[in-house]
Length: 147
Figure (spheres, one colour):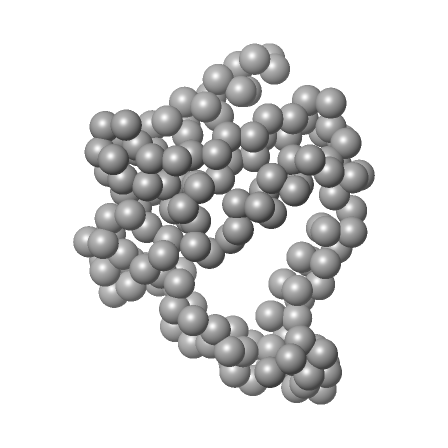
């Protein structure tokens, strides 16, 4: 389905949960046991396909962000896993390049030195605890430098 068709259909019928999507949970977490546990027990996971209206709202927000990146002037810290298969790291790099903030930092996480696991979509959980420590430490350090 083309994006134009999707947008027109969504405007006419926003409620049906028929947005074509793939199951991305396996791409979010390094720890497969955590993925399985989340799939079975996480009550916040939406069990159906997204409603067309919800998907359109997400597209509109994405369009707005792309159109207004240069207006971001507050201090910003961007964190991204290099092996993220859900959100392109190029998007984070573009935000970093285009935002107007004079105080901006970007951290691209490759592989954990201790485990060798690659950072994917979720960098603060769903992986060995030692992997979450590095991004948390980076956030704490970034905040402390601005106190």
